Length: 492
Image 1 (tube, rainbow, N blue to C red):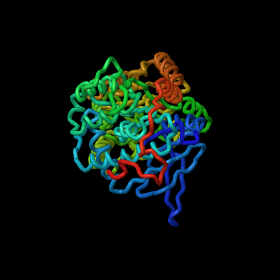
Image 2: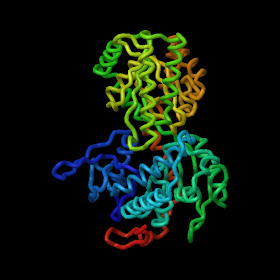
Image 3: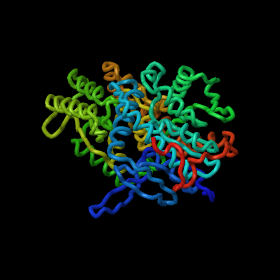
Image 4: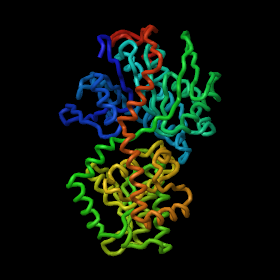
């Protein structure tokens, strides 16, 4: 930390801690699970950095505070803003649009207005706490306007942005009424990171279509108001997991014993298939279960020799499309179980829960075949978790070609989840795969996942961002002065 602020700052929709409000009005903070926190917390601790984000609860106002060596700067959101900015524009407009319109996006101007307002609030918080010439790393689709807003407030900053979900092709992105504003917002960053090379290329195509800026390969020459031209780069930085930690967890005697126990509870089937997803329409859960049901109907797989465990953790339960998905999946599971289950041995074990890392590692170890059949996914870290957990070098990963992970996990059995017949064939091939072939594939997968872990991802992004010429000579605007001092843009 410098005397005038923090030299490294993260800006994300959520803080790395969750807030709990007690009955007496007291607040307690607990560490959030998740790969992003795991990846960035050590970096932030070493740099004594700051993290700007929402607490996860409405109308919780809290002054900045220190937690595990990191300064946390809460952003307060009202219930209305959560409904409009988060559940509305972020999750009912951008999410379906960016996932190839698997579900139809909804466009409301008041959602967009709330998105703009909240993005400015995040940018102002970051501008207030960043040191001169600091590095600020902005994360994900909820905050796409922050880079440009932050550069407007603090042209001296070095700004990075990482897009965790797919960036859609131009023909899809063009549907967004505010497409030019989003492109302009993202171009406030010096370095834009995407999961796949194709995502970065899609963004550059959108820049060429909706601006008059010059592009050359992955470099865009940006002319900010009253500033010298600068270059922004859009590149691929595929995210990963804390693979060493998953590997270590899967090796513990307790997890190994729990994996054996899970198979015993299932009645010791010959083959266990596993799906692990948020209950989201992008994950291809309906397609997967339909394919499994048809394999039972065709007699190519039989209960009790084979069973499918489907973990579907709750997600966005206030959004209508998600409520409908849950009804559809549970109806389909019930029909298949009614037709093909045996007494005490279900065809599908459907679990609408979330589980901790030890139980997940045990499930991965218990599963002979992992089914990752997303219709569209920026990366899909579950696929990498399964590989990291397979310390026995057994198991088969069936992986959708529409995930970012498909670019990296070359030992997987790739599948087009829209092709039900093709998916059925791939599942049977995985079930029948020779153990020697399994080991050959899994060794290749594990080498990739264990080498390219989440720490490698964060380090590579920050090293490239650090190579960007400093803007520290540019004077901060009046809006970035310490709190209590008026600044422009505070009333959006």
